[in-house]
Length: 332
Length: 258
Image (cartoon, rainbow over all chains, first blue to last red; front, side, top):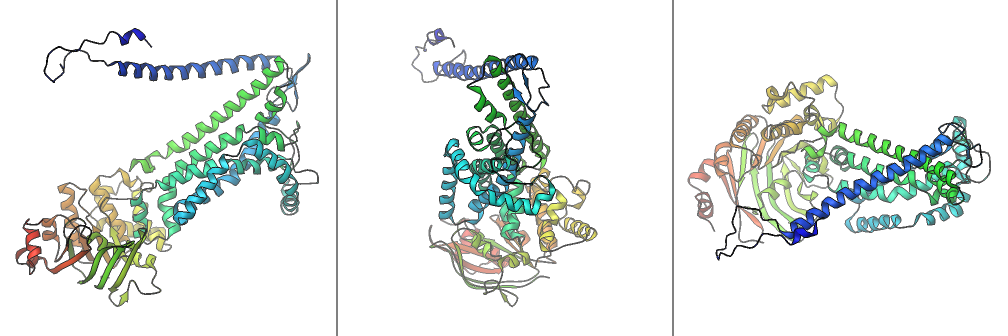
């Protein structure tokens, strides 16, 4: 920004008529300040992003080149000493699996709640319910973590046993005994944590579904569910995807709750119910404070991988939305 | 195919506000009946009571009887969903489903009503689009989205969608008010053809349009803003426009009102 620009505003014409001259420049100081501010903010954003990316990449390259084992496939995290061996396989697996479980549980429930609030519930109940859901989002994640560790973990063993009885043959739901500190429990906890954001975004989208398309369906003799299927859900599709991506972003990056519930280990269990595993964020949080400089580099490298995964997921979501743009409600 | 509508003592409310008061009229089958009157006189509300769409509005409530031949639409045990399958509706703004193709738009009502074989569905869609004078314009792009059509084409698509389910009655709520004169003419011609098969009720603000397309015309008015709308008179269109029996009708038609 150029502060001297404030002083050289053109002098006001001395004539007495009320019409300003239409020739010549008339840049007001307010315009200049605002232009400078907004342009400056835009540039600052790009500079900060570039700085973060450069920093992460630089430290990651240091770490990966110092790694004596394969960074992507090693099932261990030992970033100290002269022979550091560490890899992200367990973290990537744990992060993706727990997030997928969370999405599989949370998205259908959230869409159901959002539809109930927007199209089924009486107005009074709807606003109360919306408020309670929003309140869920205000609970700090460490509180979810404590609740997960102290309530969810001991109470899930029953469900685990049931899953083992009926779905144990699939292999992924095998359960012996022991604490339910597994990726599956983490997934359930994450599902509860992302429920509010997915619900409230979907609800907003459903409320904006055009009345005229709902009436079109009604006038054809559609029941309430058919109205929702014909006019609300297609309109809200891209909104549901965006909402899910917001939730997924939170699930992928969730740290404290995961660190509190999971008993970390560097093994990829055959069953989802096996205790152990780890996620990127949880691993960084639990190792960062006692890591030396190279150890920090290693953790930063794993953070960069998480960043790339998040980018890929977002890109995929955008592709899905863009592919059917021709049919989107926005074109109407 | 087409049925007679017999309305007696019908009033409609929005919450505690009475929108139309004690309306009785007979709508003849295989004819076009036009509703005219100033804004807010309740003609659209009345139209929406004829397929039980009024009660969809929060607080919407209806008293009175609407007989479709010998069945009361507001009788106990009558399913409003079933009523709307019998009495089709076309809206003021063209509202094809934006996420559906042209074909799926026309087939939408059929798919709600039951299962059809693919070939049956194709036949009905083609017949309905021909019935709406749209077939020649869209036959090569049935799989393209309906929202890509022009406004007038979209409205004819909505008419095709409505007639695909073979309703007894077709209600039209100012179907041309969002269209240019050429598209309007196309719809008016279409209405003339459709009345061979359906009972048609059309709300319009355009008195020339009422005079052109309708066989009978009903004039609605309200005593003052906030008062419920009333039916002033209903008669042969020719009589309403040449020699109405009520002075208020003549004033409205000749532009002497207010």
